[in-house]
Image (cartoon, rainbow, N blue to C red):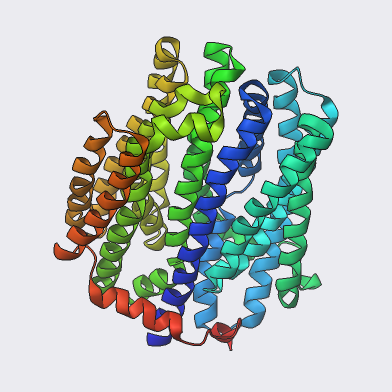
Length: 489
């Protein structure tokens, strides 16, 4: 048990470092790509990939949830052939589903985005097939409790895209940028196939539906919640386009979402990396230890989100025109609203992962449906009045509704405290309030740095973050990593 905990914390620590790189790459992407393309072209780019991501998830069917939750049980049985069997069965199904996703993308995009060449859309369709395979190959390592390797997928893809998209756009405009993303995906997929080469088994590539049936039943309910979540995240661009009719407004909203999704992905993947370990705690009935880890996760995520929120309130209005160019100068208020969404997302992320651990996918579907309905009902009238800013407000309110409902539902299954989260949120309020004062950029930077140091200091004094936990992580980071397959030997 101690080795499992050490392995989980070590890989989670590496994931945390990777998430810093992911957020940094997300910010660089937001600085470079929209400025390079301009608001109108970037609006088209963002809309195309919003549709692509939704179509990609359309046939995911909860496979990631199956791998991360059930593979840990197979590992406990020291069943190496069982690992290969589940992995190859899932991979073959995902590949078949991605062909359907590509076809759906071509049909939807051809009717919604009529001013983009069909060849460009066809390249994105091919990207969907490759991305589906990449995701499943790397998901194997999440189930093996090797989350830092799983996290390489997102980090490598994002940094490669920072090179290939600008180069592609320089050589071929919008079509070239799309081709750049495809090149990055091919490279990441080849790396994943090489790392997972020992887990491929030709005889297991024909799906055994009798074997998969109970797991698919579990995964499909989670898939419904994931599809609702994807629709919530990706439908904003389409709503802004249909209601406002302005690609520039789509570009403003798409810029904010690219920053939000980078931050959210960092939080989700950091916590998701703990699912195999937390799942084993639940399997053994060690609920008190499970509650302790939930508390640690909530505290950690809230403190990690602090710089995002305080940075938006203190620096967005001054930094946006410098970073993104004058066409995006009006996006400052949007980023403040979206930063609040990041903070509101924290308890929702914890609830999402916990529902996977305790095998309550129905809660995910219910919360996701409430969030999506709330977003659609609010976004349409708000976009009519306020443009893309109204869509950002609807997004934040819907995120809050999701977190509240989801947490209440999970409390019926396993009771855990939100006291540390609420205290951490209160620490952010005075620092964010400084952002409404008339200060120069220099003083705002000073306020950002000092304010975040004070947040950490008070969090330590109030025992929101604890010295013992920090020392534990540092000790494990200094330890020698286990071999890749030590969990199944």
